[in-house]
Image (tube, rainbow, N blue to C red):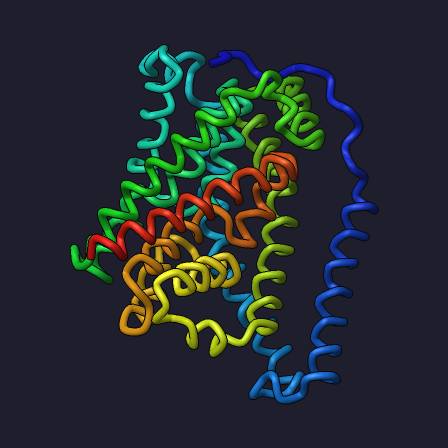
Length: 342
């Protein structure tokens, strides 16, 4: 694990104009899809287009409002790690062996009551501090599942019935360390990071002044980095939810294999905060298999649309695609095992 901040000169990041064009392009695609479905398959949805559009906007705002406090808290924690914690204070109690260090980092979320949205800026702070990419990915994947609020809310929803709580915790811990190990094999870890994030690291390294000045500057930098992604991710989550009829997902809830696939897809789409997703999943408990509930609770905090948008501020598209494949395959296998055992 490196102990110094990244100072390699980055390539010029993508301009603000190009990012705006991408966001506008996504919006045009979603609106066009809504009109096409309404024109060619008017009976596909029970509600008319204006009602679905209003519902989509409401859902997007609810995701944004639910996530925003945790993002701000994550930014604050990130700044504490970067600016206020003395150099070497965290690193000294970390194991030297890579696998042991990742095992410890994957449990760090137990002491940080932040959902997946807030963990992204906190993880960015770890990277800027000099933590390895694979170490940080291990923390990112595990933290939203093993944090104390998620454990309490999952227990409140399911107790220990069908092993859902235990399977979620063990599954989250194992898949986090699997992803960390896979990306620890990469020969050039900085290639896993976006040019924009490397440029941000350069700005942070060059920042001068007292701790108060650096805190304010870093707060602005982090919010400017994650807020556009959070807004776009929330809008996408709201739009996709009105494009996919939930009745189609419920119709396949009793099939052991299809139920797992359906709830994994639903977890990606609805983009719920991991602190409350267990209560949402509880509404499907009488229709879907226990294994599909576990798959929902493992997939959602890691690769939902909102989380992918936030992660894209730091990690390349190839990393996100690889994470998605690993998490989906792992969650499907985990859900299958739970169905066989329960």
